[in-house]
Length: 272
Image (cartoon, rainbow, N blue to C red; front, side, top):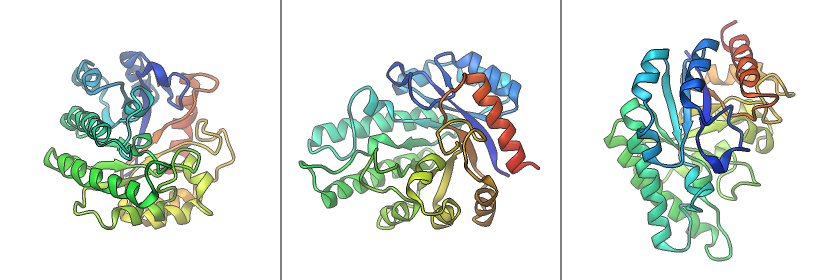
């Protein structure tokens, strides 16, 4: 059965980003549980910032799971990405992600690679960049497997990457990997931009999809845009998806209302 989750960011540089809750992890967990979410997804500035949180206590107290941990602060805060022309910077990026994997693994929470994938540019042509990315996914995917969690790779829209922007391209990116432990994140906002049909895109991802970001066409809470969720739910059922649908949305008009709108739409789509 598909489960619900909601994002919490504790990254100062991402304060204007599409995260439902910001800064106060205990208060966010309390509100998430009160509203009926199954889990939270944490976006933190470092691995140490994750381990510094009293997550064991908070998750047990509120009967929540940790759905995933984000790595995007590596890019937002430190400018690190996996396609950097500088080999030392690429290694720093892998080290940052490895630390996030290690911090999430005790909670069975996979790490998500989104903005840290990088892009090809004048310094690094497309095939070279894809090679760098695949090398990192192989290494980090194997590391995650040793800890009993998958690694999640997120195709982004064309304004955020020029590597894989659709589910089909994501599958093609994963195909040559020597590890089978890297899964795709299907973010409905990015898919709304890049896929001709979101439901068909989900079917393209198929068994490779390991996480979903549940959001509307305008990156607000599900139910506040023009997205049609019926074919999306049908496609997820058709591919046998039973992971998390996590709200990664702008807190408009505020965090609590965004979370409330999300869970109401989630229940209407997946529980009715």
